[in-house]
Every structure is written in structure tokens, then in C-alpha cells.
Image 1 (cartoon, helix red, strand yellow):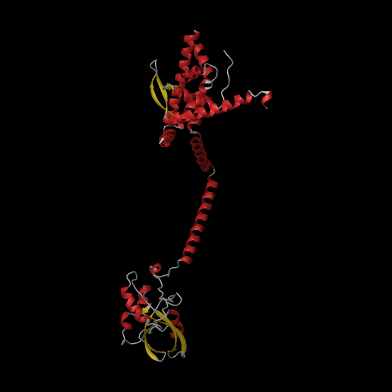
Image 2 (tube, one colour):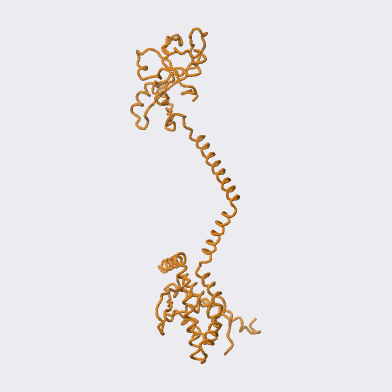
Length: 113
Length: 273
């Protein structure tokens, strides 16, 4: 397995929002999708997903309903709300700003100081 | 609009937390159980593990269920309600356990409340005093503003006129204090304080005379004989509590006046009640 990074706090919420934005998912599906879209580069302790889901649900950024999974079992599905979509947008923007700033700082060469 | 739906969503979530906590617990259990089972199935499929091994590994991947559940409850915002409920239960148990302390504390609170209530009553009396009559809080004093144009005013005429016309006032009375010489043998003549008052004054106090009667409107007629109502102290001091006082004629300020009534002890209206 390639080297994996630990998750910064707060980024898990963002990843969950992103995963759910791509379609209705149950908790396990969210995990699989996160692994998929990060190409396995990030380690997520699987159980930690649920507090994140509940937290986001409490903030009404996602909403849930019980349904049936592919293999005919009862599962709780999560879906993005309009507020969640808006939040995802702002979070992504500020993340990109932050990442850009750090990247620029790290690529500063001796000559540019 | 987004904010409103968000608020509604949060309110609904808070409601569920409050009243459906057991259901939420069950749901959380079901969700996590489902997750572990799915992971175990995947491990069996992709890594060819047997059931028990897959399940064990799946649990490891998941992490400590109880810890995640606790975090989940936290995230739901149930913590403070749980803490409050626990504190309340503990508090009640302690109250029951230390009965003596509870009793003393309750007593102290009762005393403090009593003092506070008394202070309030005192302040109330001071700020809005009421005469100790029947419905004394309804007695008000009406002042007539000085109007320089009319000079000496005929208060009695004003009282008669206005008493009838004022709608918010039932009885209107007027009085003035005056000093006269009282000649009531066998006591020596002496000056006494009097209040010349309209009969309605007695109507306002709604106090019955101890002996005889108070002043009546009939006494105000121009041709009515002069009458006098005396106070309890005056009856004892000047008339030696004469039991036959009613109907006795004395000389007041040179005028023959009949005593028609004695008021009960403590009645000092209108001067000093």
C-alpha cells in the first residue's frame, strides 16, 4: 500500500460531504467512495465516519432516511441538502486557497527571498 | 431561505435527540452493525477469509465500537442533555439522602421568602398607603388647584356640585379643622380641636358609631340643629365616659350643640387616622 496520510480534523467532514454529493449513500458506501475518490491515499478509521455523519446531519447539511441496500438489507441512506451543497462549495474554496498558499510557500527557492 | 430550512432541520434533529434517544441508539447500533457486516463480506470476497476471521478483521478496521458510539452521541448533541439528566437524578438522590440538610435549606428559603414578601408589603404600604377602612385603598384625596381669579372659594358649594357630577368618585367629603371652646358641665370649659366635615365623610369611612350615630346628610340642612359626634378619647376625657351621652346638649363655640354619636376607639378620621 502506498504511504497514506492521516486526516486533518475537519477534512473528514469535507470528504463526507463530497462523497454524498455524488449520490445517495449509506455509511459503508460513503467509506468506499472516499477510498475511491482519494485513490486510497488517505487512511480513515472506519468507525470515525459515523460521528462525522451525525455531526453533519445535526447541522442539517445532510439528511437521512432508511432504505434497502443492494443486498436487500436495511440501511440508512444519506443525501446532501442545499445547505450542505453550499457548505461544500465554501469549504472546497477555502481549502484550495490554503493548499495553494502552502504550496507556494514550500516551493520558494533561495533566490526569491 | 437556505438558512430557514437549515434551522428547521436542526430543530427537528434536536427534537429527535430529546424524545427518541432510545430509537436513535437502536438505529446507531443497526448502522454500525451493518457497516461491520458489509466490511466482513468484502474481506471474505476479496481476501478469501472465512467468516470468523473476516468479522474479526472488520471489527479491527472499524475501530472500537463503544468509542465511536460515544463520539456519535456527542456529535448528536446529546451530551449536555445526558449530563443534565444525570445531574438532576443525582441531586434528587442527595436531597433524599441528607434529609436534615434539605430541611434546613428549605427552612432557610422559606424564611428568606417570608422576609422578602414582608419587605415588599411594607414598601407597598409606604408608597401607596391605604386608610385602614373597609376598602380603604379606594379612598383618595382630591385637591382643588388654586385659581387666583376666584379668590376665596366656597368649597362646600364645590363639593356639592362636583360630588354629584364626578363619575369616578362615589362619595366626596370636605372638612376643615377648627378650634372651639367646649362647655360641658361639670368639666371646666376648654378649647378642643374639631373637624367641621360633610356627612359624606362618615359614609366614606364606613365605620359604625360606637354609640348613637355618625353625621347624616340631614344634618347638613340649613335649618337642622347643630350636632356633634365625638371620638372615643374625647368621650372618656371630657365626658367621663358618660353612658347617657347621646342627646346631651353642650355649648360649642357659644352654640348649643347636641351630641348624637360616639365613634369607636382608634377612630381619628379625618385628622389623624
